[in-house]
Length: 445
Ligand SMILES: Cc1cc2nc3c(=O)[nH]c(=O)nc-3n(C[C@H](O)[C@H](O)[C@H](O)COP(=O)(O)OP(=O)(O)OC[C@H]3O[C@@H](n4cnc5c(N)ncnc54)[C@H](O)[C@@H]3O)c2cc1C
Image (cartoon, rainbow, N blue to C red; front, side, top):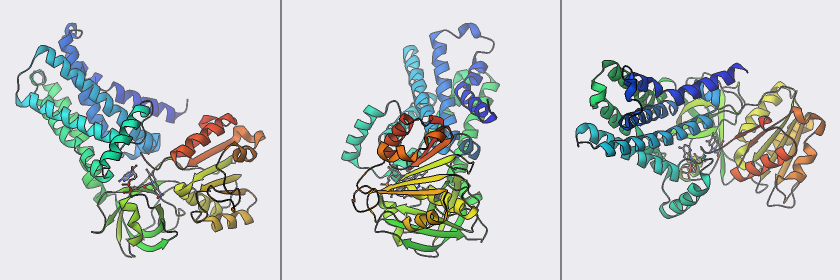
C-alpha cells in the first residue's frame, strides 16, 4: 500500500472516529452507564457536535487535504459529515425529549443551533450541492421543482451557508453550559478546544486568508473570444510569478463595485511558468455574463491553486476528452507539454456545440501539424460541416482512438458537462479502460 493511501485511510478513519475522544472523556470512570438510553443521548450529542465542527475544518480549504483527496472529494466528504452530524443531533434531541428538559439558555442555544444547521443543510441540498451520489434521484426531483419555483441566487444561498458558523457558536454555548460538561474540567477544555479550533479555521478561511495568502492580480488583457466566451489575462500586481500546475484552478474575486465580492472558481487556462495567468470563462449566470465588461487594470484577488487534475508526461497514452468550456484545463496542460516537447502519446477529443465555440482550434491544429505524438479530434455536435460534424462522443469515435495493445497503459482525463462525462466513462469502461485510469474534473461542486 503506498503512503498516500495510508494517509487517506488515516484521515478518513480519524475524522469518523474522532467523537470517541470526547465520548471516552465523558464515560471515563463510569462505563457501566454507557448502554443506558440516557447516555446514548449524550453519545449522539457528542458525535453530532464533533462531526459538525469537523465539517467547518474540512470546508476551510486546507491545502494538505486538497492535495491528498482533491478539492471536490474533500467538499463531498464535508457534505456527508454534515448530514451525519444532523442525524446524530436529531437522535440527541429525541433522547432528550424522552427524558424531558427545561427551557434554559443551554437548551435554547442547542435548539437554535440545530434549527439553523438544518435550514443550512436543506438549502444546500436544494440549491447548492451538485454532487450528491446515492440519494441524488429523489433529491434531484425536489431540487428541480424548488429551483424552478424559487430560482434563488447561488451567491445568496452561499452567503446563508456561511451562517453555519453562527450555528457553531450556539452549539459551543450549548455544550459549554451543559451540566454534564461542567462536572469535569477535562471535558470543558476538550470541547472548547474543538470548537475554538474549527471556528478559527473557518474565520481564517473566510476573512483572513485573502489578506495573508490571497494574491492580488491585475487584469492586463480581456479578449472576447465569442459572444459567450471571454479570456481574461492577468499578472501578479507585484510582478512575481504565480506557481501552479497545469490543470489546476483557483478562486477569483474581482475588486470592483460592478461585481459581487463572492469568489468564483475558474481553471487557469494559461501555461505555467510564465508571469501571466489567464482564465477562459463561458457566460452561465449573472456573474460570468458580466465578465466581458471587466477592464484592464482591474484588481482581482486570487486564492489558489487548488485541484489534482494535473496529468503528467509519463510515457502512457493520454486521452483528453473535453466538452465545451471543459477545454480550459487541457489548454494549460497542452500548452505546457508543447513548450517542453510532447513526449507522451496524446489524443485530444474536443466536442463543442457549434464551430464558433471551438475557440482554440487553430492552436491545437498547429501543435498537431508539428508533432506526430499529438492527435486532435474536434467534434461539433450541431454542425454537419466540421470534421466529425453532427456526432457525439460515443463508441464509434472512442473505439478507433483507443490503442488496444496499450489499453493497460492508457489514461483518460475528462472535463465537460455531467451527461457527457457519465456516458463517456461508461463507454471507456466497456472498451476495457480500467476505472483507476479514468480521471475527471467537474465545474460544479
Ligand atoms: C473547479 C472548477 C473549475 C471551473 N473552471 C471554469 C472555467 O475554466 N471556465 C468556466 O467558464 N467556468 C468554470 N467553472 C464554472 C464557474 O465557476 C461557474 O460557471 C461560475 O461560477 C458561475 O457563476 P454565475 O454567477 O455566472 O452563474 P450562476 O447561475 O450563479 O451559477 C451557475 C452554477 O455555477 C456554480 N457556481 C456559481 N457561483 C459559484 C461560486 N461562487 N462558487 C462555486 N460554484 C459556483 C454553481 O454550481 C451554480 O449552480 C469552474 C467551476 C469549478 C468548480
